[in-house]
Image: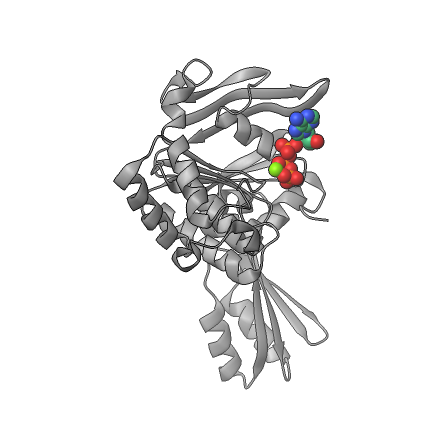
Amino acid sequence: MLQAINLHKKFKTKEVVRQVNMQLEAGESVGLIGPNGAGKSTTISMLSSLIMPTSGDVEWQGVSITKNPESLRKVLGIVPQEIALYPELSARENLAFFGRIYGLKGPTLNERIEEVLQKIGLTDRQKDIVKTFSGGMKRRLNIGAALLHKPSILIMDEPTVGIDPQSRAYILDTVKQLVEEGMTLLYTSHYMEEVELLCDKIYIMDQGAIIAHGTKDELKSLVSDNQTIELKAHILSTKFESALINQFPKATVRKEEDLLTVTLAKSEEPLATIFALAANNDVMITSAIVKIPTLEDVFLNLTGRALRD
Ligand SMILES: Nc1ncnc2c1ncn2[C@@H]1O[C@H](COP(=O)(O)OP(=O)(O)OP(=O)(O)O)[C@@H](O)[C@H]1O
Ligand SMILES: [Mg+2]
């Protein structure tokens, strides 16, 4: 549906995006993650025909958008990283302004404004001027502005940065609902947990290049196909340890002071068995923590650096 082909962008002599290939299919929810300055916003700007690539191309339904940007713009909603609203206008007036840019007017525009206000949870505050809004409310309105023309693709650039946890949860719920309703989504963030929650397919970007892509499971398998279970108990008997080794012959079992670590394939679901073995051996488990690789681990593994400082 939307495809980046060897996208490259230079600002003067600085290479900011290098040979990026990406693909978004209809109904798919795709995440783009990477640290500050990785080139995410620049990539998104090229994908949405806001800036021209130095080389490479973007195709929408097989046709280059440098030749025909209008066909994409009609169906694309963009939520920019920087909030773009008129602070002296009310929420409703802002939506009306953006709706007119998309060619909406009269009763259709009013109807869409009502629907969007509902969706972003600002119906009650529609008449208030935007400069009196909290950061989270401004973000929600920014998202609403991108939804007025009923886009089929939504590109969101870090829509939850710098807001309170409640607004963040609200936005994540709204986006999840849009995806469930069939929206094609490209979601940029450096919060791994958001991308994990919302996206089927993930591209990891670093220093202008895509360094890995795939489903969450595919990416995590780059680090390890194992899970580690950390057990604490009142008394960790050697009998219990032997029972574990017998039950899971492929696992690695290690004991260090009051902590017992069991490492085994991610595909296994050993907790119920572990608890049953503990009960049979009079061991009372006080805590059990299951650790599987996170997307943060994937990034660390690929680059040797943490995603966030
Ligand atoms: N118009 C511009 N002129 C010159 N350099 C630019 C311009 N826009 C972006 N850059 C540079 O390109 C690099 C990538 O920027 P970009 O905004 O795409 O990163 P990002 O991944 O979106 O980062 P963040 O997570 O901080 O939003 C940065 O080094 C930035 O300074
Ligand atoms: Mg950015």
